[in-house]
Image (tube, rainbow, N blue to C red; front, side, top):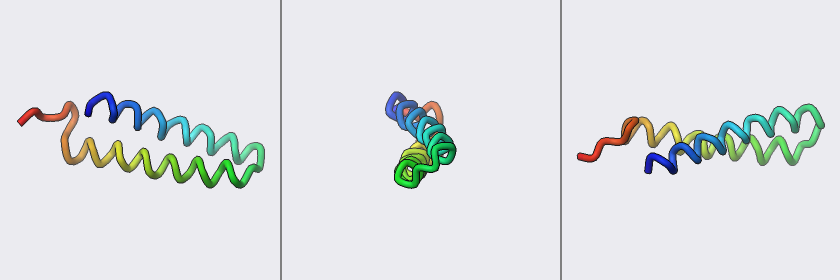
Length: 59
């Protein structure tokens, strides 16, 4: 679960970078998809940290 959280966090960060690039290029579809990806994957990452802790507890 630890590695999955890191991957989701990286995807969320790259989606934010893609959103900024979408604003620079004025590409509406890119902005929408990148914002959705950032919210979803960022939410998964934050929820995992809140409910399982970092590093995750083993019991």
